[in-house]
Length: 171
Figure 1: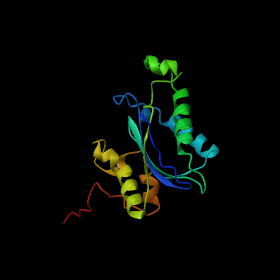
Figure 2: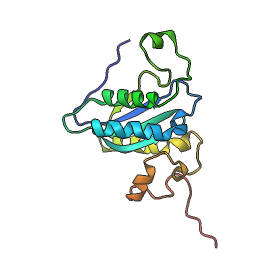
Figure 3: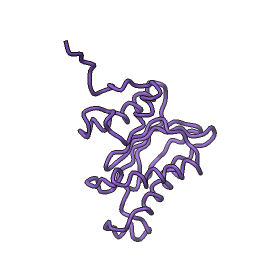
Figure 4: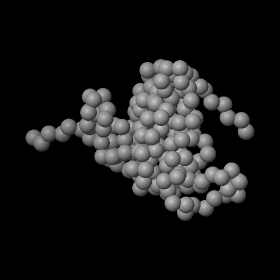
């Protein structure tokens, strides 16, 4: 099967990247290693993080590439590779992965969507931030620690009560 990617220089994209074993929680159990991988790639292949949320078995990100740059595939390859190298080899590896010298941590591909306008942008940023609640991991968005929601809240983009509680006063 041939996958077609949409490459827009300086584009903004929404991504979903999954672990191969969706029953594992490697991403939150090894959040520091994931952060180190992202930090290294961001330094060597710059990009802006508009939104990012890490769940136990997958992550969502809205990223903007520098003007003239469209190579998000290499960035994800490097993030996945660096995270994988930080993990002990405990997973079972299929013959096809062994043949390609691949680990059995990540799904081979990722889902990508090119952001088309402001409405599309905010839809995907909000979707990323809402995801921990969607999966029943928290009752309030602000309670999920692995999210750029906290940065956005500090910047005044969201109130602390966004999607989670109302301001009730005792009378």
